[in-house]
Image 1 (cartoon, one colour):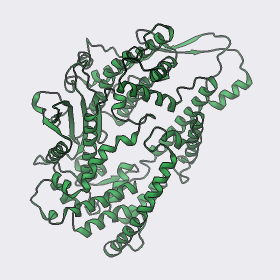
Image 2 (spheres, helix red, strand yellow; image 1 turned 90 degrees about the vertical axis):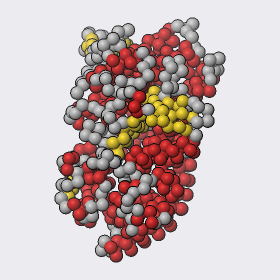
Image 3 (cartoon, one colour; image 1 turned 30 degrees about the vertical axis):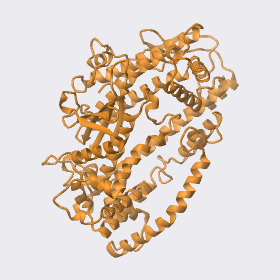
Length: 632
């Protein structure tokens, strides 16, 4: 694997035109003021600048020797290639090329910031302030998200530790470079001036982008420039990072502390293939076993839902709900949680908010903590009686069919699903036969096309490069205006070298100046095709397909010309993350509408399922999904 970023230093002082970043560490033998020393210890900050500098330590980053002349990936992007080189560019070219482009972008930000700061006559219009950065940012974002697609779907085999490290480093580098421009006082002042007195070249989208930048600056505390406040913010931030890291380390350390092994296939007889694959000790023997659940959400929650052995469920629940708690001296997270609460509260108040919730909700759809509390109160009033009624049904079923007279929390995951299947005499495994992936996807595109006036045309065989032969590419257009909206790249099935889960990414925005259209990447985890070439979807996979296809259509329909405001992305404070799920949630509700569910399904030889009304299937899926959300 590529080890490129381990020695890279943060560019906090300067970077020359050849993109070499250096951190200057000053050393001194002079005594420090006692009060300043104590303050440094309390806030974990660097000591005051020494009175006498006696030497320097210079650390140079590892800079990939990649250019458009020797890197096909960068050359394709620089020449405004119509489609990314997903197959012809090597993983090394893609990774090192992306790192190099990120570092060059960082150098551009610093040079442009110095230009705005030191030249009173500099162009302070939108194009003068942001144009040079957005132009390069377009290419950097395109390279980064294409690299993410490659790493998640077709990366060479390597150890999980090495892969995770390389993925983490490139993500952190991208986030740091992306935020660097917003931290510069010169750019902040220019943004304020543009927002208060828009230049003639600003339209609605440019004004919205400037507003988004200003909201992010305020919510992140980047607009605080006095030394005392900056030190406080830096202190709270470092403590939050420190204790978050400790908290996550303890959680991850307990993932393999307890494992729950199943050898009898009857115990997991209701589990769908993709769940058995998660549990399988040997991935090539997912259907035969043995199986093993870990103390990780993606493993333990399906185990609670499909394990027929009550004693195993009870043990798993007890270990799961007590992990990293007082029962574990070394991995006890109690202190870390309290420190996170305290430091996040201090951070929020330093930024001028009364609480953490007010800080996090300031730019969200809800707006205030009071709105959220009122919503939760209303939901509780409406759902409380429904839950009591359902609990009675679960208890009756458990006593009659499972011989469980004292229904416990660890039973609900399993009993909820079993009671619904028993009541309506339906098998979720048989239901899968009605939802083969590509037939279901085609029907889904037909429904969405009818509702929103879109046209999806399969252009897979036009010679565009793919990470895997199973991928397909669609051209999407508006049937009313004939406008080409972009292209959708779909990688649908799980396979050996595929990592991560379902995902949707904006590859690049449309650019009239470059003559490029919008590209959206959608990554799925459908079951590998069987001997007849069919990949059958479980209802949970169908829900994921609807969600991520909805996200893809949402991005394609967006008219925003800038990535930051095309769709809200976490963890940016200025983005309304809830809004990002509005359209995907709309498509997910197709499951709960009998006529739409039937329109998505395909005929199958075993038709007894459809002898029930489709509202039956709707109720079953609704029961499962409601419990999954409540249980998780």
